[in-house]
Length: 315
Image (cartoon, rainbow, N blue to C red; front, side, top):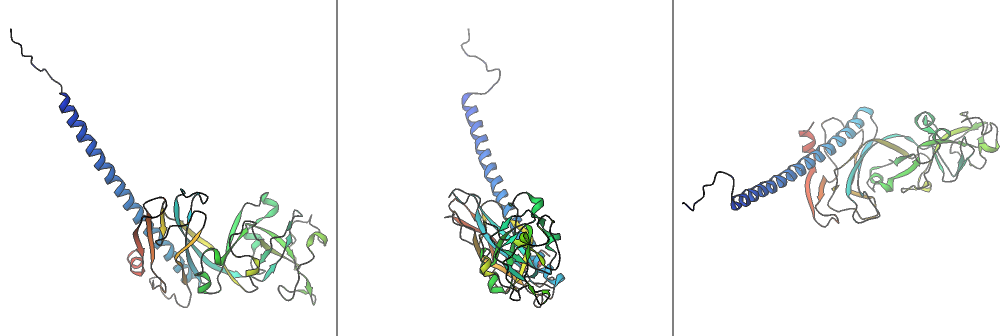
């Protein structure tokens, strides 16, 4: 009788271990390659998005013949924790008017009193552009106005050139002067429409003695009403982008609890200097995009740079 046994099929334990090891190695290589491709796509997408918003702002300046700008800043998603993800954000703004009156307070159609102050542009149809307070039911809505008097003001940073206001309008009563209502000509806002005719029950009178105003938000984290003057040029947001998670502008990670302006802080376009849709000569440093390789931002890698040549290549 033969003591040998024929193997009809199957694998030995050694063969199975070898196959499993090969599969694990291939999976590791594939996963690494996948994440490398993903990071590359995110970086390219970020560069293209930033280039697009810069081109958009410059073209808006060329077409509308008003100053425009792109402001850059970084922030944390959870600004109360060091573990919050970091993001870079770019905001394109366009000059839309000038402030004609700055009020210390005012009254709403619901009879409420606003003590934070109002900004007024008597030549703008704010009552058509923004929500009426009586229709909102809440004061959570907000809008940001950017002061655009000069380039150095804009380059002071996102929060240092803007104010957060409620995204609804109330009305401001103006003192009468020589039978006319003169906005900002020695006028004092002391008596509000709650005590005058027409009464507050009349929804939003829009006669010559009243002007629509945007109230300062109680959570305003920018410049306050004392920083605004009659005649100040202001702008509003026309577009914005947010970079992918842990992609920022510049090479410095934002602090845990702050919104921080990022270099170059602002690109500003003036109608007399923008003469062509392909004229992308900057008067400031290039815009750098970086990736945080760790949560704290101690390890940062530059992944892209926006300069005039890139903008021309992507037109």
